[in-house]
View 1: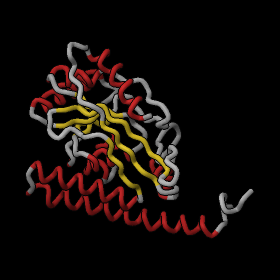
View 2: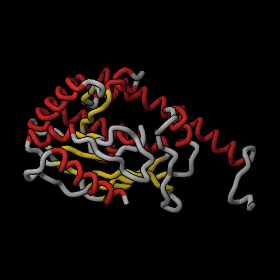
View 3: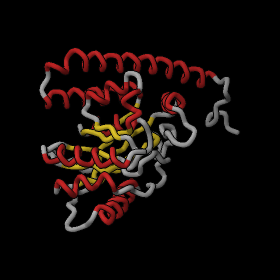
View 4: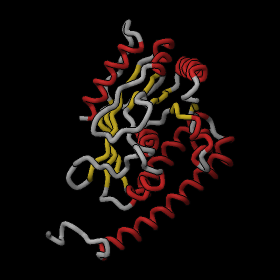
Length: 259
């Protein structure tokens, strides 16, 4: 085996990469703490537009600290109301989408209780949902509809869980009812992570199965340079479709954009 293409565990390059990862991890922690300081002390004095700019700038900087480049294809919707519908691969997805275009996410309620991250997600305007509760899902759909009617840009992951990014899992249609009720357009969005050197899919940021947040983060920090690709499709209106048929059409569009 050619040693130039495969490093043994004790090779100097492996230790160098680990040291670089530790340095980046320290910078990530400092950046998260800086974001929390901004949320607690500056956000109360900022208007909505200024907050959105701060969130987008923070997310962009976090990608830089992680060593992840951002590539945006297509054109994100310039103004709301709109619902972004995306595939879901990693805990990084929210950061990547915020960096490319600020939006309010719908996320599982557990995130609100995560140390540091919960406070940042709440400050970014996240709508939280108890996924096991049908009544709470109805409440969130109502809140989403009201938010869209106010002109907001929302984002959901209709797969309901993370996948490996190699294929898009089936879409759940429930949250699309908000766009139907508000007569708001939907923009399909495809996410993928690729190796910066050869453009092949990178599985390092994946957060599926038995993966832990710490394990996924460490794998991302120690991987070869990664590019996060966000591909925005064309805006769609329901045009008489119910949420289920619209979800099926959007699944095809996101799958096509991901390829």
